[in-house]
Length: 148
Image (tube, rainbow, N blue to C red; front, top):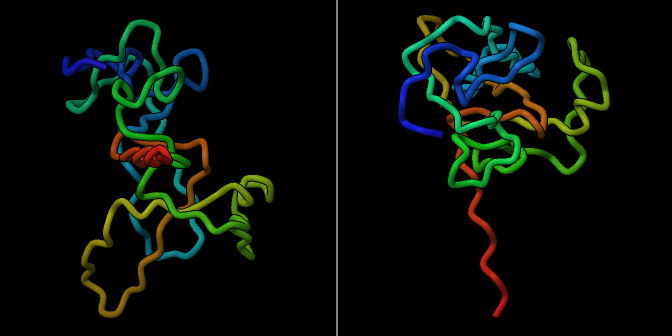
């Protein structure tokens, strides 16, 4: 990744291609919500769109694939210090649009603190993400120190 701004989503290090000209922007971590057991969905963008936070990826690199920690912006959820997962995964009553197998590998992203609300007494919930999701706000967990 370079510090150069991306000219479009298609060349951005945070963009993950889904179809020919459509992908998702993984620049930011999910935010807390007022609804329990909600799944984070990153926004779809078209290859030719652009924002002020995009960064040019290295030659042939896609976010999260084949990058060493020093080159990769952010982190995959499974390797991020902000990701929390119970040993058994999650098993919500209403699985929404995700299958049971996905929930078994899911955890929550606690990167963003809840924001104040105009309503008194709201309860915050963090959005669920899959172990292979990730974002540009993630911070890789330090490697364990080698045993001496």
